[in-house]
Image 1 (cartoon, one colour):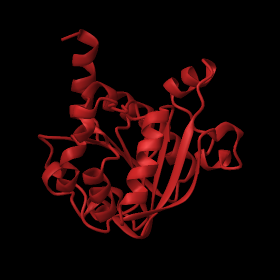
Image 2 (cartoon, helix red, strand yellow):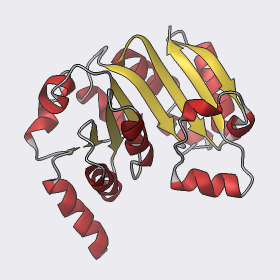
Image 3 (cartoon, helix red, strand yellow):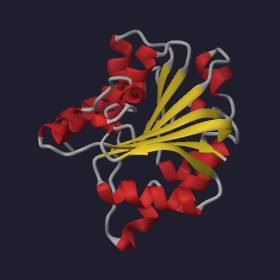
Length: 219
């Protein structure tokens, strides 16, 4: 394992804004994020597959009245997000190191107000549909976590994932699509991404890829 990754893992072990295995909150936080971590009753927003946490931190800076949790299984990525949040003194930002398939172990029914999914792996092979983060099974999990009227957002450069997700939501009964676009940067919905772009999104757009966006609400 590279020295840099080891340093990141050690950082996460010590960071107060990272919840991961080996820390007491890891097994206690489900249904108790407001009480045990944030110490307020503000709405909770989760970014799944948050990577380096750029979006989680960006939203946390823009909306100090809300609480944000970035979820990812990669410890080195989580460490970078944790450090960025600490750099900006964001007490309303936390990170959870866990696999999204186990998210039911960390979030209770009706605990969240919003879920964001930013440029996830589209998993285009048919045999990998079970890993696709907008498949029916995952969407059912997200629906359970959200409060009444809760929102689900997807941003992706993948036309495949965009079209797949639209179809999946339309066929399911747990969400209704409010708005969507296959070219966010040329859409009236542009302000809804709050000016936050990940490193890879900047690369995608520079290469001419369009960014797709879906806004859905718990049905």
